[in-house]
Length: 543
Image (tube, rainbow, N blue to C red; front, side, top):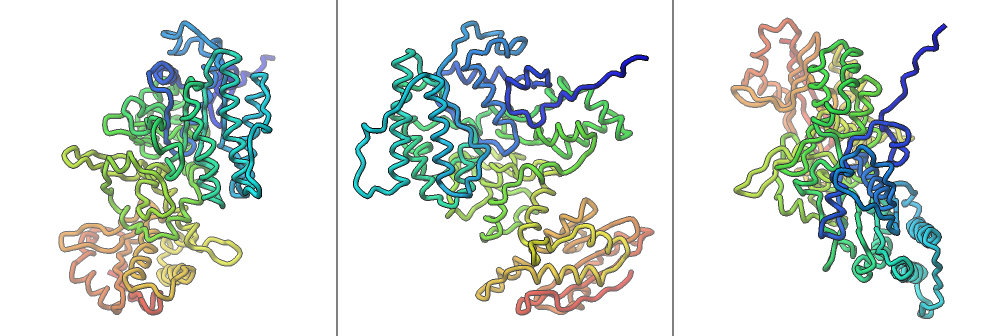
């Protein structure tokens, strides 16, 4: 009896170690040409911003293997065409990907301290803090920060004097502690002190590479002279992370064919679906479009199109900032304009009110078009998965019932719409409005905005058969939902009666386009009261 063949899982999912990936024989999408370009240029230090789960850690680990001189790991890869001299450099590697930074600044300090201890052990050096003079009654955090800063520079100098080689510094997800910080001012002070060494110890540094989601204001890393060169919006590095269309075809053609077969579609149809769900990130107007690698690989591995970003790429802190700000999510109904120069120079600050650039760097928006004459980017959702993730995350954050239960239930809403139960739909909408934390001093304009946001959010999440504010020959309806058996035409009015809303549906003849449709058409006028901050009346007419 023959032993059955076992197909090994070769997807690079969850593997951030370049060495492990290569030794295990997993598929590696060769990005080592970027490695060579980085390390051989005249530039000494770089910063790269990309969304979470986009391959930054794997790039950091690839650079790590290069500076560790592990030539055998690069056999058969692009870098071998050019690199002839493999040198093992001293390496300081600081990984902020993991860690409970919301617990306080001691976690951040401990992370740095452990990295320094590893660096000293690896290079056979010791640090003695007795040479540092302390002030009486000095703040503990200030004292510890000064020790680590002095220690880092001292270590770099000691290694250089011992080996004759400058150190390569790699810092992965540098901003993660700041994004999750509960002591943001203290943590920024830690960064200002520790990373000032990138300037003061420049002659002892061979190369520095930092990654994150965005640049933070008021940190030494991104202020003054000798700050890292930001390649986040550089066309030459637009595809340094992510998977290009050509890479997808070159490395995963068999997997795409398997995906297509499993879903009873053609290869071209599979490519079209994968693009719709996970493609179209663009990090420069002249750059190369890329897929989100984690979502793409997960879909191919599971042979199923799902919203994988929602579980892996959504920072809770971002959603809380949107909830607690004056940001109007209705601005995302269509693509938004933003200055190219402001996007490039953007530094995150908790006092900034414009969250559009943060949405871009977090991966919720991407470059759709460039208006050269005005130096303006047109930004929009990159794909269907991210758009749905955004609205689902907002719904979870906005609508909280007691015991931390979500106030929005997708399945219940869809069930009511499938059954034609409009009364239940209205009651569910009322329940949502009851969960919103309205401030007593909110203006009527802000209350109206919140009402519109809720309606837009709910109808967007309900799926691809929703048309929010569709265009008609005589105007716009607020929302239309179409399913197998019914067409629902909604018109909402604030501080006007429901009949007035319904009259607009008739006057504008919104139902006219559905006269030849076999489905039952419901025209629904809804009245919202800014005083009661909820729906107070509605009228339904069957066409």
